[in-house]
Image (tube, rainbow, N blue to C red; front, side, top):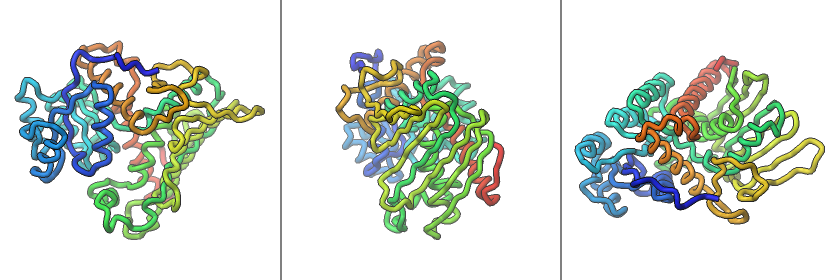
Length: 388
């Protein structure tokens, strides 16, 4: 069970770029970071409209003087304060991640960035090198990876309960963009604009989540992949609203991933199934408190979060007893809890702690960018197999 008595000597002074009024993701960051009192929101640059951003920050209870017009002012002016921010979360459109992350690291801040991390592997590598040089945390917000039953699945795979991993099937296929809603939805519109979203839409917006879950659960490394993508709403071209990816892993295992926003009638349909020589497991984000476990020759089992029969693992962090539903905000709070522990370890130069602490780090973000580049390369060559 989660220990609510754990604490830091003082909350981490924390700021945000983006995530202003009406932003669901901005609210998710703030609510999750505040859950365990490890972070204290003290400043931000919330909106491209400076007056609106200042008003929003004031409504959140911040000093209006610490609600800045842009991220450059935020970083520069907070650096002059004895009580300036120590960390920043970046909840802005994809095209801005590289520049804001670089400026934050150069300002001596720990960084938590939305995915995809950057547009190119070269940019991601530059940020990773800078974070290492400045000895700062650089985390990527793969929010679904905070669900406890995924860590149960990871532990089961690590302990060999599935045997040799043979097949992984992944999907994240909702139906909310099966019509051209971007005509009246600003949030959808920028996701379908290559200048802002980057070279992909559903692969970068949806597929990267499930791809990271595959890496986290199995540790498999991709050898080759083949990608086919479509724009069923023609105005979205060259960005895809549907894509299929096939994988060959270095171990000889194989896999598939389906990412789509035109799966009409579907709510989310984010699932990952890992098939081994002895057994299989399957997790579905619409039922995140359960893990389906199927051993060959035995009845299927449905494992529930918070129960004593689960494996003991420090990342399997239930916040309430079994039978009560935990969800999206608890998963994000689990990640922010780990980000805080990592930031504290960075500040204390506790490398031993950092070596044993799991969280979605900059390498996870780099792998996601690398995967997107390979998918685009394959699709642009007519679904050709490409080396990863």
